[in-house]
Image 1 (cartoon, rainbow, N blue to C red):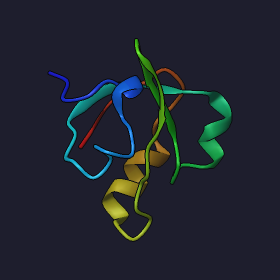
Image 2: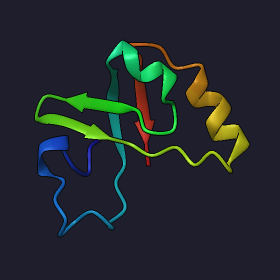
Image 3: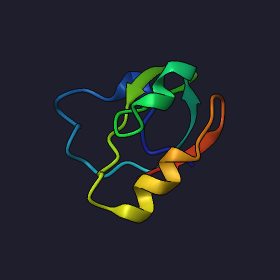
Image 4: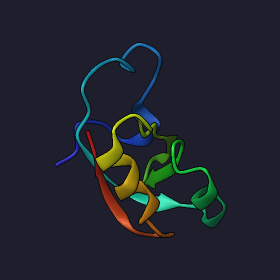
Length: 72
């Protein structure tokens, strides 16, 4: 279940907790795992992976183009 679509995220709801399944987008983002682009049917968003959280960062390194990921 989605709490927000990418196209619905604005500065007014940016700080709210979101829970979404999104598709990892763009192969060139593989080199920039801490700021991957993700997409859904409404648009594209940029996620942030905290490099200080080793578990999350290692998981992000294993993501490939078109993988479906859950972001919270």
